[in-house]
Image (cartoon, rainbow over all chains, first blue to last red; front, top):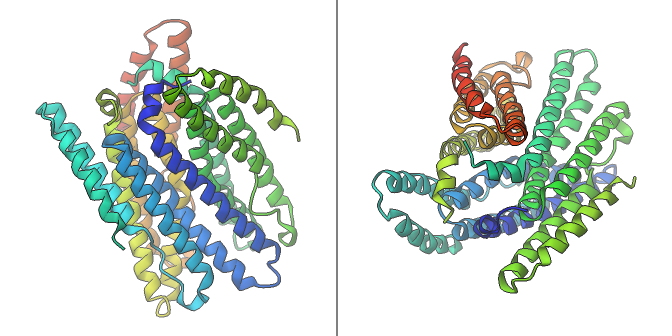
Length: 156
Length: 156
Length: 156
């Protein structure tokens, strides 16, 4: 087994990843179910398939951003932003199914959560270099600010 | 280079990941080859492209589940479940090509392996919390049971 | 926060991952923008959507290969190969848009960079076993050779 001290630093990320895997399974189940009655409503299948594909296209990017942010800076805000993203994704998927195919929501979703994760990565990298070369305790300030800033994601 | 003790805890996962990357390359090669003779048999290209896309859609989910399970609990059963998944995927891909487009196999595959990996993640997280708060040696029991349970994946 | 000594071993990989996430966001933005004027030039949307999808299909594979190579052997050449891959991907994406849909570039791209990363993984795994069983310092030689070999990726 892995060093428990390592697991301690990633367990929130693992939990969010686990939830996202379960959500993916839920999406895939929907596609599978709709695909079996494909002959009946072809447009419904197309819509659910498109929604699922858009979510899957962005999934690897989301995972990469969340894990990098969590490893470089702090896991709690990264996991929180991940959760926010997953909720946005759920809403996007449901919204996609309900819409008529004329007015589908756009290709992108969860822009704010991803943007926040990218920002966390950048801050993490910069603070790593600062800590490396200047031996400052800049990192702790960055973590504190990030923890506070992650609450901003709750603003609708 | 990374700490060798860390590599020791993930080398099986790395090997399975490497095999999966090679398999992806094999799939992509098939698509590339079929795409070049696209004008001749368009339906064959569509089938191989669809099979490849379904595999790729699920790939990030599979990697996330396998690595989380391997990091949180134990790498051997996670890598074994990963191998089983890759074999199922190979069969799915080949089966997809052989089928006529009317009776394609469903969107999902390897459900049992993924389910096992998700279960491992959950057990790993729970045992981490138990070890953290109760200081029990629950983790070792969990690992032993998981190792034994992974053999169940061999049942067809 | 994570152990800083761990971050030290992965920060280059994190930077390349971050760049790739930004590039993905750029691609997605292009698709989003083209999708909004979908009615006008449908073929342009199809082309940018196809280019984006091909890039996303290969993205998880690329990330897996780069991180495995970086963790198992050495981060600098892995990150360098990752950068080369990202540049090839940028060229592929731009090239895809410019082409008429008749003569689209193939499905695959960045074969050489991926192949190099796979090779690094294999060398890393082998050298891990050699170091484990023979207690040799084979690993340092492997790293040195890899660092030198990564320059070969620059050959057009």
